[in-house]
Image (cartoon, rainbow over all chains, first blue to last red):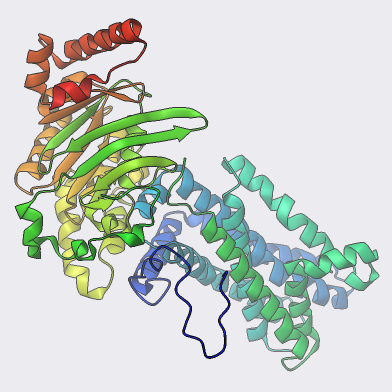
Length: 274
Length: 291
């Protein structure tokens, strides 16, 4: 703005020469019907791939069970690490699944086709987030149920809160996967982004050692990495019977990060490409 | 007429997005389906399309012919609105190319079949139909248009087969069926008959003529096989990002004294080369001959 509105003065003339931005067809940024159709399509694609579904559901359970007997003599350690892992698994799986799925969408030409059709970017991203969010609920429910009722994971708070954090983590994983798929030219590269993006977070999130005990520089870095708050949130549920302020903060930060990265991911979907 | 540099929101004709059937002005003064002037695409410092000017008439099949790499796909992507760095004028169905209002009105088939391999033929079409006509109320409409599209491309017997398990030709027909959903006014087909056997190719060209003749749609079909040119109403011959000719196949053969479009193409290439050598300023033949 170059003009300054004086108090009481007439409203300044529009400074932009062009007309207002194109009006949206609807008030919502996404069309619920198209988003639902996209989510159904993504789930239908997975339905034709039962092995992937089985791996997504079984692998976390096997890992947690393994962990339980690795720390056979130290149940308290299993409680700590187990709860953290319940938050980390959905993030890793959804990261991988989303980055490959959207990369395929980009390379197969279906993305170009969809964006030449009346589909909003938010419809597509919302559809993916919804489909993988549902999948994450199934995955987390199985792993959490097994941990608590079979493996004896000692959770003081509500298992529903564990599930909630797990779903938020899954959304964050979906968002990160969607975002990095824009920078991967092949499935090989997409898979390599997993260690590149998630391993540092895994090391710094407080799973191996308390974040306060790290080198101050690393602690500062871990403070800005979303997985730290995912693990922190899980630990809050583990140790407190009620919803704590810290838990709320953690859940909000993970949600905000997921929303931010999803928005960045939307920016990588271009209707016009070179 | 709209220019690429301008904001689409400044479109002077806001009524143009109303229902085409209820718009008598559209029939009274038929705008060409595609109008291009000084259309240029530069990609990585290389001029892929060099100042093209042409019109694609409505209700006809216009063939876009030329060797691989001559810019056919880029031109089609510009028309559909997925090509970046397009300059000049390019109007499609009365709107600047890429206008959101055009999205439901154009069917586009990319060169490689763009369908989901891990869905069945019907599931693919169901999804794309839901993108075109979302909502519970349009369910019957969707079912009908999916059934018709599958029938159009003769895949009724394969409707419940995974697209990934189909042959290459069958998959490209699934891709075509997607573009036929919702009866678009303009169909942009990038090499739709590559790799098909002669019988299927004939059937598809018959389908294209049905779509243009009975359903009144405009088709822009690219091919690098010159013998397909004979089946088009009009031809745009391209080479190295330029238009060599914009004419009906018969007129093209007559004018160049050739028996086939392929010969005519070669004749025009030679002519263009001779002109370029003579004047150092290659005169676009298309402009003189087409009018």
